[in-house]
Image 1: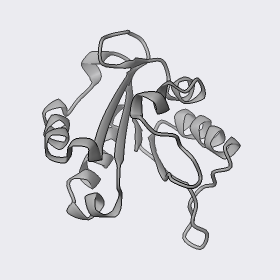
Image 2: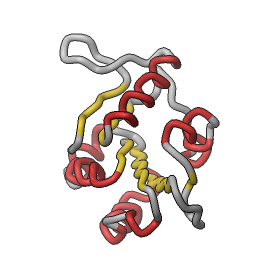
Image 3: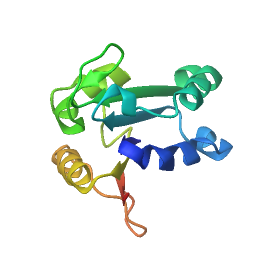
Length: 137
């Protein structure tokens, strides 16, 4: 689950349902904001980590400042240079991944193209795929 800014709220609502935890072996929540002080829902995310342990991984990314405990840069850059996957402890592949993108349109466009270059395709009702997108305003 990859979010920019306030789009994080969409994923938190999904993570509040038990069905989500039963459906997936491992859930990774990536949240990209400009500065560390824009990272939100810290207590709720900490509670998810405490409850679900290795089943859940939270990966904050800041694009304008560098700070301990976060990756630095834009989501696309961390995906392209491998930092996102190394930090999350997984490899995004057509065989083992479904990526959800929610946030600003340029992130969705850029990351969708990067995923397509890996052979992943957008999920559609009649044609299951490897990633889902949602615009968030």
